[in-house]
Image 1 (cartoon, rainbow, N blue to C red):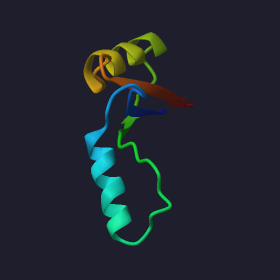
Image 2: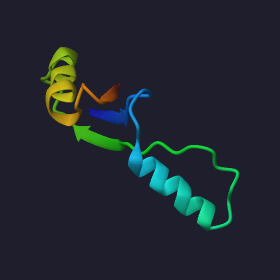
Image 3: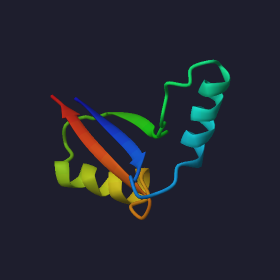
Image 4: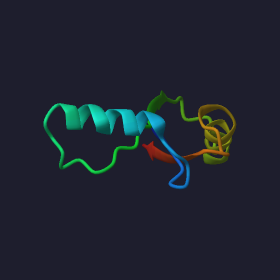
Length: 77
């Protein structure tokens, strides 16, 4: 069993890393890119004994900063 966690900056939070990546893309001759948001992708291998609530707790308390980031949890059977 696997779970995928995608952590992204909240839409209302400035993403300086995304701005730097966008500017670098522009310097490489691709001005069509208007915005970039940089986040984290985390894949967990699970033994199946955990609950979805436990996984949400780990995502909220350990893998993301709920003040400035949102997360999405995808569980694969």
